Image (cartoon, rainbow, N blue to C red):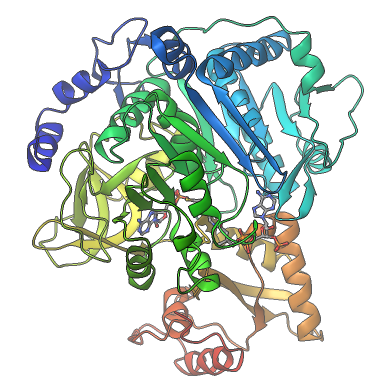
Length: 631
Ligand code: COA
Ligand code: AMP
């Protein structure tokens, strides 16, 4: 099978293509309606199919010869623990925990928020929710109570599942007080919270509301899989947009299972029984798709790694995992490899381990810079595949299909569109641009299975944010171009979303927090290049007239505010006072220009600028603060 044949079929006859892929999964009732419209006029996949994602990923494999195969391998250097759960054990624990949720009144369509670190119980909780046909919303543990509260408010969960703590290298982060604070802040209150007690920090339970995970499971009856429609939601995952309010990306059960199952072989070349490591976190889309769901849908083994690429204990962490568990493919964000490269530039740790089972390294989540790409290939001797995707799609929009036909890679490119994604580069009028010309990267409708059909509770935001710029296309928010061979080059976001250590964050949200400080009249937060984390936010602040405040003190206060409101992962560590913010005459802050200045890029001063000398001031200030040309 060639890439070309596969791709052409997917865009020319999408219904036939995806009907065939869906038929590889064990539906309770195979879908006959492959592509249809919902009441919002959106394209939907497999509307009349009946299924259960937990059944497809667990029970089916137990019933078909994989009961004793490891499904989940938990490896935690920070908790000094290793544990293997077979498919049978996973199914049984999921069924029991589903029983716990059912006893708390969770039914099909109800929401359950999960705020947990990288422990197997996070996967058990997610699958248990899926088993009941309910909808989970996992919140990343690095988010502060306010962010959690915003998500609780929007998702309105009946139950929240958490753990007493997470462990960041050697720091124990207590989750329960943060959850209590978030519940306090949110108007919506859950009926119950279920708390996994970890020995590193025991949480205080609230009488009448909180249950101890172990006690609840001990008293539970296993619950059966509840059939859902292909278009019933499996989960909501909040992601950063351009405003302070995160967007609840909705994922369907049927399209998700079909696309992910297909992707394991097509993109990652993973067969049943193979071992796959996605070194991400269950709180991100990579974790949802490639730690939790896809490997098990495919009958493979997934690694749940609670640790960092470095410091737990050293830069050999990934390589140790690869040797110990005979990992066939490893997937992580480029920032992880930059961290490894920084600590072990010669790759000496790599030589200490047997990497003979490791066939391919995949990277995504942010731009893969050529030095990291070349270093990883040179030091590991393995092919490195860059692939581009978003929370909204749930799987790769572009990549190099290792299970279909490996193409010659080009550094800086995420290779070719994945089957199902009709990727086009558009100008501002919505015209398709020829090879070599840069524009907005858009996907011609219909989007393939697994892509979001809406934003939770806010279809208008979905329509306005993704579908209204170019009728008939989904706007990705990224800019880039295709070359003569059709290879796609992603050049970065065209909006105010930034990527810090592979984490997607909104500068708009940070601006709202900074601007709320009593001394601040106006501000801009921009993402500038950072050698380790890809991008880092920097705040430029204009003081209110007459305010007399020590600048260092103000910076400290602003850092503390962002950390308190968003969380430590915002990495907002720099703010500086400016006399003027560069603006157009109509008052629009020229953020992109400031970013270009900081990154040492060539820039053109727009004719609409109000006061060109404001740029020189920004340049001098950034230079003084050592922020220039950090790429
Ligand atoms: N819970 C609580 N706090 C967390 C957290 C979590 N799950 N994850 C990160 N944090 C905290 C960190 O402890 C750190 O806090 P500090 O400022 O008090 O030190 C802060 O958030 C910033 O974290 P991070 O950006 O991860 O920096 P780091 O120095 O701890 O680690 C890397 C740097 C590169 C090793 C790390 O970012 C990494 O492994 N990145 C990979 C990203 C990834 O997997 N992305 C998923 C998309 S594929
Ligand atoms: P998230 O939704 O958190 O996965 O972030 C998605 C965004 O990350 C995309 O819109 C891109 O801006 C960026 N991104 C993801 N993968 C890549 C990649 N391979 N190359 C460049 N940018 C990427």
